[in-house]
Length: 377
Image (cartoon, rainbow, N blue to C red; front, side, top):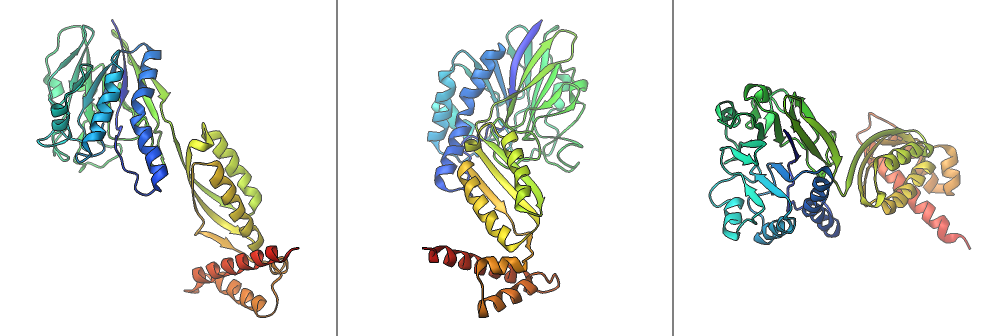
């Protein structure tokens, strides 16, 4: 017996991305809907006919009907695959929720909504044991029933759940906590989990697939689906496969000269499939001279154009003005004296005006540099 399938979760279709400007928010929302076609391509390459989705297909119970229709239309177009969708905590199966809308609209023939904790046969080789959420806070381990679920002899038992394994990603008071040894207790060949947005193996034959399309700057591994192969009397074979359109990168770097940004550039180029499809949050600490601080602004402009989005947090980056900085900016007289006073306050860690003085000095330097540029013939 060999059974192949794709394990995915946390699609969060119709996520609004309100913190971004409308054009980018629209691109990110479209990428989440585009997950369906990308996963279908992966499934075909892997020889899998079933795609198992472990919760949070939709971002909310309150999404527009048109967004639900679009998702169902995409799934219907991929009729060579069977899509098994289980409600999660963002889209629980309850009265007047998003799945009631799916029922009213009508799910395509190749889409199965797993809204009840009952065994579901996947051909003759495997049986799926889903644990759908009917509320955001069930207050119990929703996978308990798997231990006593009756399935035909000789078939692979595949568990499907959405929540936090105790000791991983949550504390023991988590509302959606699950037993870490559920696969062993229930005799599962594989336990497919959703909720944690990065790929992670948390116990033997127990995996989180993570979200196939990132939606924040990660400290785990989002942007993948899992290709799973089950063979009789063997451990599951699990392969992590890239599925994301966009790459999100979070970086913390200490710099002491503009030259140190070369390392940042190399790291960005190494981590991104396409810079034009990459969003970056870069936090800088350390210190620069006033002249180099101005050069950082030029670097920001260049890389904001190369990347799809750059959020550069330089609030903790100190400015250490040097005599050569004032000379290079052409400051004289009262402006020079003001710059020196601001520099002194800005370097005083005990001054309550330190941050304001540093900001004022940067603005003064910017005005001076602009004036010098405009004065050139």
